[in-house]
Amino acid sequence: MDAESHDVAAIDPALALGLQLEMRYREIYATAMADVPICNPALGVAATGFRTYGGRALGIVTTPWFMNLVAADLPDGVPTGPAATGTTLRVNLPAGEVEFIAGQLDAIGRIDSCSLFSPVFEFATMEAALETAEEAVRAFFDPATLEPPPAPPAAVNRRDLLRGHFRGREEASE
Image (cartoon, rainbow, N blue to C red; front, side):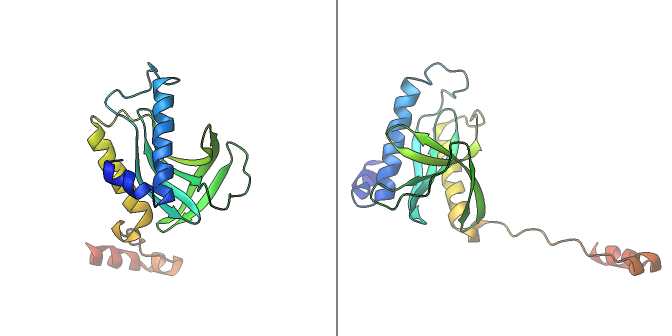
């Protein structure tokens, strides 16, 4: 997050939590993940698009070893119900239902994660990773940016099949 984000974080608890996650994952990268081959050395740690949604902070965390959509309790918010680490949870977002895995992160507490990329070797630069994270945030929280699903194929019932009517439908659509 940039300097402007630090100013906003003083007001917005979701952005502040995003900054805390950045700091915590930087510590993890410098210690537990140092020299681990799964890490992409071209990437750093960043929190993208953090916002309050459903009483929790949601956003994307990018590290040299993963990019996850995360949900965490706000420090002054109502804590979510208990969930055993590793439990799959379904969260309704504007773009639809998303599955998260419940977990715990030292110095943060409960954090639920939805893996987007792991490992993250497909990103040659941090800029490319951040661009992807920004697009993902838009997709999760602004369903208007999603492409409409393809139209379902025309149904063919048994009567049409036996009469050969399905051919006319296929030819008309070509």
